[in-house]
Length: 488
Image 1 (tube, one colour):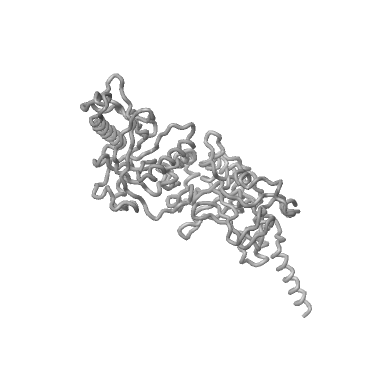
Image 2 (cartoon, rainbow, N blue to C red):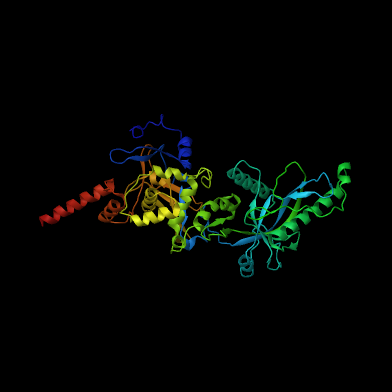
């Protein structure tokens, strides 16, 4: 009533309202929509046709198995190019040894993995194109590298994985703004200072240390200070970094208080990296750099531990969505990013019955995923009623559950439309001018359908009889036509 009266003074500020739901933009407020309509979204001020009403990253999403390796599971990017090859500087902190000043060790802050033989062989049939800003590939003419190493993780000092991922993303962005290229997770090191990689993770780690030692010796020889002069060339081999669980640690400690040296590496970066363990998820280069492939290990581990019967079907998307839901609710894990609709907010959506889901199906889903049967039923119902289609490459590749989408009431003559845009965001736009305090509605069904078809669909899937303005008008017209026909 407050909104319909035109007063906005006592409502939450727009920024507070958007932050509460995890939206990037929200030009509406959620209040009582009137008798029998529950809560709805109302325009805070007048909106022009085509205006953006809301933007948010959906709370939960999943890609179908048929497209899981072709589209990023986080931002829904679908790169048309496979990879690029470029030269990057891998920085190493020099860690002096008090007992032997001529043999420092080096901290690269990297964990390496062996490249799979299949990935190495693929380079023969799918050569990388140089990046747009490079005139030619720096690795042109290099043979297939059977002993290359993959960057499993870039280590940074941070209080949490979220902060580390943010710091890594900012460091890469800052370096590339200066015209430099930095390595990040999933990059393949093809060569070190012009020498093709060999020996897998251990061999490449040794090559990096040897190149860092050479760079340090050159820097020491060029130095003119008394302290630097004492560090003359001729030192023995660098101290080897120890192995780290999950990969090869190239002396993973971080010590910002010592000098750095740079090692030039030829690096291959895939625009889309498929999880090597489950093969049911891919992440674009930007999402890999942001640490999201690392976050995926929580849902990936749960999926790979399932019995074959739970993962061997034609499509595992429902199981994978439930596992993501469960992982995001674990306090120690949390959602894959903070500035998005949080998974827990899905519990605020109205539960619409969509027909009986067999109890044995719910029991099997619950046993496989660890999500209660009640929540399984609610999420499956939400997928059927509130999910937004993810369209890429001219096909439906997945679906997303959005809290903001679920907050919109229905009309067969809607004034707004919602879709997943090219940036992976739920995007709600005005279909016509909307007045301040007018309710913002979308259509839950195909508006091209007849009155009977629309009403039947809404009754079956959403459990309500539509009484929107269009349905009332068409119903009156149908009754008039019936009365006229009966008089003939």
